Amino acid sequence: MMLFRRAHDADLDQIFLLAKESGIGMTTLPKNKTLLAQRLHWSTLSYQKNPVQAGNEYYFFVLEDTESKMIVGTSAIEAATGLRAPFYSYKVSNHTRVCPSLHLHNTHETLYLVNDNEGCSELCTLFLKPQYRKNHNGLLLSKARFLFMAHAPKRFSSKVIAELRGTSDEQGRSPFWEHVGAHFFHMPFEKADELTLLTDKQFIADLMPKHPLYISLLPQEAQQTIGIPHASAMPAMTILLKEGFRYNHYIDIFDAGPTIEAPIEHIQSITQSMLVTVSGIDNHKKSPIHYLISNDAIDFRATIAPLSLDKEQQACILNQDTATALQVSPGDTIRIRSLAPN
Image (cartoon, rainbow, N blue to C red; front, side, top):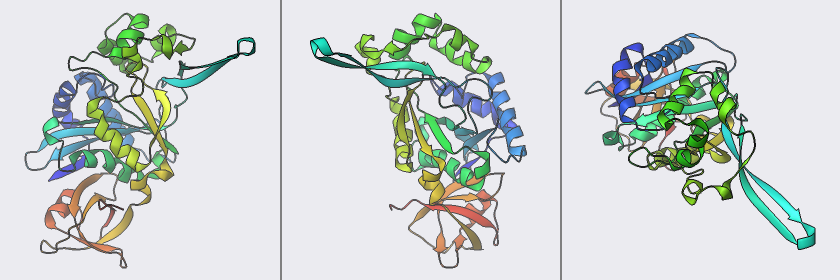
């Protein structure tokens, strides 16, 4: 069984192995054990809080194969971006110039450095081992976060964003970085990416251009990557678009990956989830419908499994494996979201 749960300090070694496997552009999953340990500690402190609004919290989750006890994926939520350091993006805008005497009207797309997305809750740190990208595992790793948000809505902002990893080749070469960022930073992509976690990001404000960049002046190779996710990020983007997220015309300043957003009240797995009571445990009850299922606790656990649902009584019957994984018993409340087509 695949179990989505909060990350613990004891998971550090396995998470570090995943980070080394994740490739270029995974800013919040650094290939640096000290930085990972700091993020785990930040997450532990966040779970211990009882905030009444989104603040400086970070919730780190892992996906565990319960048979092998192997951690095979990670994901996280930052409650409010820009509180520890500025949250920079490029805004993709249109600038129009008109020359009446020549009857010319030109519109150009530009990139402008902004921090418009500060204060939003951010979905981040999503990585799943390639051999586990099957059987709804990616869906569980991504969507279970929404059940946690439904469980504790006061911990999050009214708007949720996700930055998708931008385009790079098999060697980790990012065309956008090579043709844009490298000219301002004079360092490898990986170094600049790491500095966003090690510093207060003042180096970005100091070195990035203060004026708009005209996209038409960039090489075609760079233009073609703007707002385009990495191939490995496409499944995650598809999941989020189906949840109600939309491209908001902001991109990552290093690799040009798209930022997508949704009001929290429009995210389907939040609005269409429901609380039910576990009325019993029975391995003989069969159901063709699989559900995203979580406990209703801050020590959060979730999985995908069938269950027998009585909608009128707002009750359900679980099998023993599911109940054990979620650490629930008859009488406990769980949150569910059907995976059947609407």
